[in-house]
Length: 267
View 1 (spheres, one colour):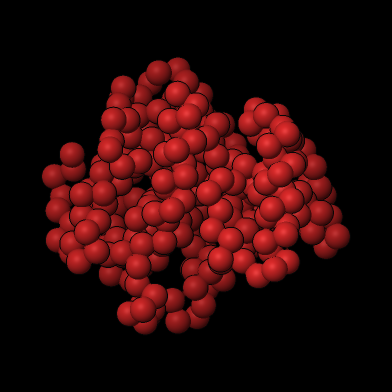
View 2 (spheres, rainbow, N blue to C red):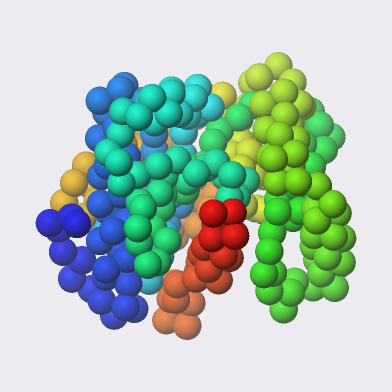
């Protein structure tokens, strides 16, 4: 357990956030010891930039890294050069997760990977559409109320197709699209395993080349030097301003429970 205290427990997430920070600390140590670069990402980065704290209602932690850095991380982890209480899960979802074992609530760091994508608009659309389709095939416990009619049809179709294909085969196809298809001249990158919207953010191939540090809950973590560009794309120019009260709520509970259900079924 981390010795740091998350003082704000307004949303009942203090214990989970403590465990998330402990897991992030372990991953940070592994990366620094092995010259592996990563960047804290998403709401984790947003909280660090706003006031150096986790967002009180945030219930997950994200990092992003280049494909080459992730491959280095995998070698370290699979060579058993990490504490026994952690492991890398590459099979439950379409994105890898660095997981803390033996937790009643699943505690893990989502790892989003930057891969090349073509400079051609049509090729970009094709790659992103195919990646989204595989994601849809792997989803379970979908809340259809969050989709319009077109979205419900698309998700329903991809889910039905997904049931006919094994998890290993879906992941193999997904990896092939990520790393081998529609790469163009390798001038641009995107987070190929990110969410429906996140995988559409395309930046030049130098975006993840430089790193600095940012403070979060009393400790320094890695971040890429151009992280403000992401914050503006994701949250808008006024990203330092918190959302209205009605929008301040944990956003991943249903998703976490779905992951937990799949993981238990596999085990």
